[in-house]
Image (cartoon, rainbow over the protein chains, first blue to last red):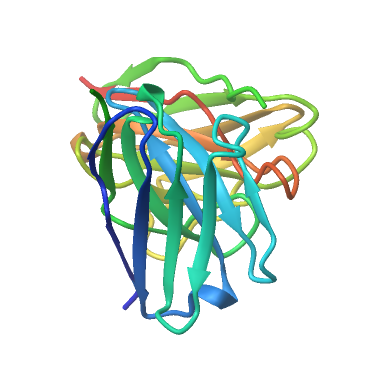
Length: 117
Length: 111
């Protein structure tokens, strides 16, 4: 059974850093495209980042230069390192598997990141 | 990359059909047959309902169907049921560096 479990969210001050983790089971992270998608409170979904099976990474303009997506093949885990956090980064962050370009078939339960002083 | 445009809300009575539109540009919806649709109930993670414009994942009811014409994609739900009441989001691939552009979401109310 495919499962994704995110951890690492919490309350962080503006300018701070946080690392989110997404532990996968039932499939191999490194063989798939994997993404982070976020949802601000009461708002819609926003694609954040993707790591392709070959290792290439891409980011939304809103997080480029501040966020880094990575994976640990030995742990079958996806990460999102978030630096220079801003209030507008406050959201539930979901990791999702992308079996093909532009769509996501399995999602984690999400982890809430709150950026506030 | 701008978000795709969806109506903020749609409604219908049980048994009726509704259609949600999703308008993009020639750089996203118009360029790729890679539009997907997601259903999200309050407090829950999104669920994939349609991918590659009109394909249904295993387990998704055939009451859900998708189509595309030019820069606009559509999701049609037939035989509306109470449990269909949720938020719906479209998403389009827009190139390798912009893996997914989402719509603003549509709240479906079943009257």
